[in-house]
Amino acid sequence: MTDATDITRQTLAALGVSTAADLAPHFAAVRAEFERDAATITDDATWKSLRDLWMGRKSGVLTRITDNWLKPSPPELKRVVGQELNQLRAHVEQRLDALQQTLAAAAESQTLARDRVDLSLPSVQRPLGSPHLLRQTFAEIERIFLSLGFRVVEGPEIETPYYNFEALNIPEHHPARDTMDTFYLAMPPGAEPRLLRTHTSPVQVHTMESQQPPVRIIVPGKVYRRDNPDATHSYAFHQVEGLAVDTDVTFCEFKGTVEHFVREFLGPTIKTRLRPSYFPFTEPSVEVDASCFACGGSGCRLCKNSGWIELFGAGMVDPAVYGFVNYDPERVSGYAFGLGVDRLSQLKYGIDDVQLFFQNDVRFLRQFS
Ligand code: FA5
Image 1 (cartoon, rainbow, N blue to C red):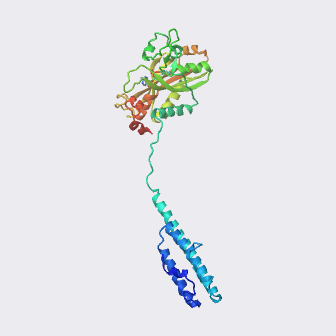
Image 2 (image 1 turned 90 degrees about the vertical axis):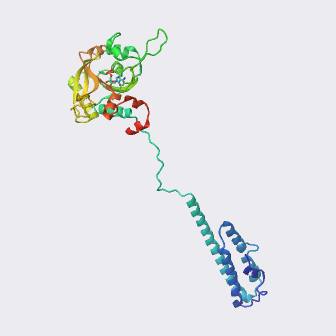
């Protein structure tokens, strides 16, 4: 950067300036030089050099003009030199400020361009978990019975034969035990035998032992049987037990409750039928069938052309059971039912293999999220 500023190293007298008119071209040349320098600024470093070259306190161009032109100038020129110098200084300061702002703006837009976030890009899709279909089925069953005033209770999965069988009127060697092939736990010699409960019915006994009527409970839970796994059987499956006992519970209330549940669970057009059956802890006992929701009752593959689908077992509580829990069979009556949750879920959602519930294949699970 040279140049016209070299003249600022000399005094005005040496430059032959004696009037204001002589002075003007020199200031014009210096200002033009500054403009040329300013046009070359590309970054912070060149901006700083320009600032030091022109504004540097010791030897900047403006200092030189002050020292070489203003200070030694004769009184008649001093005022004009001072004015010109002030204008030049204001101009240099303004231009430097403007240049600095331009550089800062350019740096900012460079940073913005580098760190640019495209808000229109689709977001990263994180797969969301959802309750398992069996959990959803439990929730649906619970919703229906809670709305009827039932309470949800739970009980132990490890049981004694007394609660799983005897107190439910299934004494040792009773043939009903054969239908529930049981897992027994390995126990130390002499210890009371323990087993994995084969149904949720033992919680009927626990509940009646610990509270007086009225009782209206449902018991969702896991149960275990030594069944060979196939499309409708597994070792571990799920039931919801139901029990209602009070001083005036009738078969009519039982039937109404069951029909309400079936309509709520499977749909308002579904009809219900009760078929005689046998359970040692209910008398009379029934199987609850629903009109086939796939064919409307006309007969299809799902209902094996019968128009009906077997849903669950139930009945009026056998008075013998009250004897085990110190309820007076002359005073109280009630009903109980045992829903197979896996089978109900299979039916409702058209799942032909119960094993799908336990394989954790997300392609299956996702269909019900
Ligand atoms: C019972 O377990 C009785 N406790 C039900 C009951 C309760 C009757 C209260 C009367 C009063 P059952 O053995 O039929 O009954 O089993 C009930 C349901 O469990 C069956 O209808 C079926 O849906 C389901 N189930 C039985 N075995 C299996 C299995 N291995 N895998 C999947 N579901 C099963």
